Image (cartoon, rainbow, N blue to C red; front, side, top):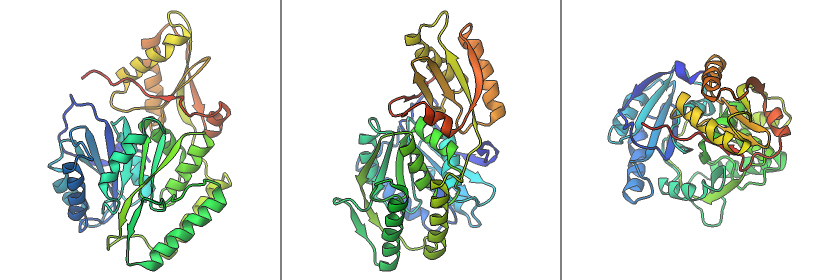
Length: 356
């Protein structure tokens, strides 16, 4: 999916503000639940758990047939950094979150459901751990978590699904399906580039790729309250999710290779200064999009994750001009290619923030 093809309604943002966190809110026919959900968000902001001055909120309308987009514009209007992204057709939660991640400007990015069933005060817990972990996920199964629901069957099916996922994938996590996950943004862009599942099992595939790359994953307790009106169909969606999970586990789901720039040290850059020069150059040619930059002893690789190939080739040309005479090659990489380079934990950097 090319997020740039989506029609977008923008709420003005301050260009001179550095965004620390982008929150992506996927929404499909959620017009009736947005007001109450964002009341919980406002309460968290009032309590100091969210700094709206440095937080961007992207609500992605996943081809809704109701007035979700119009209602989203109203509830986001008081926020200084809020946007509504409208997808032309319903693609699924995974596709909606991917579209938001593609446009995220923050140093970190998280996604949460439109009903805010997870208390948004947990955002502060994500931010506390994200500087030291590439991925941080909410878990309703940790001892300090609180779960409030009168729907025993739905809760039982959720626990069963998590057990099946844990036994089938070896993830070893308490709760893979909690709709509250955060990432260092370059990591999020890479993971969503590789994941091809568009519906509810996308986050299991995300976690599988994070494990394959040896990235750090932390879990935080959450307070979760069931909110009536969910569009999830427990039996049908659970079966579909399990099928997608095992297809991913067996390596049957493959993303198209991503275009990348491979830069090796050369005059005037020594190996130690090359990564700094590359970060500065990327910030100039693609400001406000924290793409992953992988550093190794022999050079630097810029991964144009969630960037269309034609645009990526143009960006490589611009980079080459800024880094000349340092050698730059345009290459294509798959997830398997990246895994052969060893664990990525601590090796995925980000461009410098361009000066406004």
